[in-house]
Length: 288
Image 1 (cartoon, helix red, strand yellow):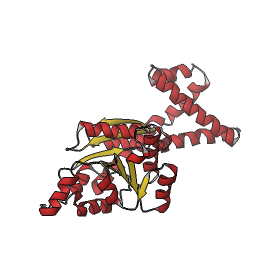
Image 2: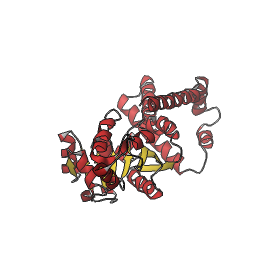
Image 3: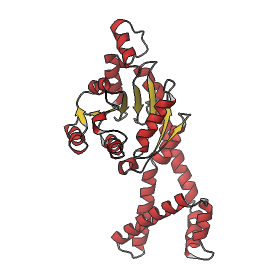
Image 4: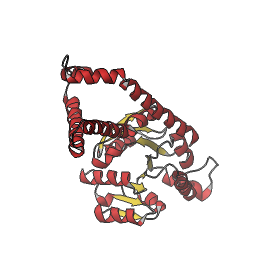
């Protein structure tokens, strides 16, 4: 049996598989992936030396744990395929061979990174005894700097949680939450957050260009400034407000800039943006 199988071999699955192999969490021979795209299968085989197939059921039947790395709009088809094979039910009583198949699949752990797909929806499709963990990762996982939050379903164990944390810590950091509703805030913060940072960096660079700096140099300096500030803030024992105070000398350039940001409602704008993203996440969860 493989230790982990991926259903879906897209960018996030590749990032996770690469992190697991490079950090020696698993060997390539302990992983398997399925995907309908020949190019994605070829990439897993050639670049990562991981077995890849077109068959989702092959992944299911050969893996102790299965990670759903498919888009939310396609996960229902995947879940239906597994349920039809005996991996779950829609709630109808199971008898005979189908019950035996379902009970045979019960030991498997299912991990999902499909955005907005709730634990209830996953458990309902996979069967009442299914061990399910829902995870919200983010794009920086593709460069080993991800931030993920996960919530375990009613049947998942602490050992399952530790297993899932090990997977996502191979590409950054990961935390476990007890309340699934908090994943909407996580989505708004770390899930969507990289886009806010990209916009801020672009705005910094564009503003410097408007003041006369060459575009390439402006972007280079903006990127290094943000990276340096992040590293300093992460290492420093001081609170953010104190770090700001140190940079903002009275009567200086930083103070002038911060006064303008305050006058324009910078913090309120960020708060409204995060709230809008969280609200949209809640809405998608209700309609999915």
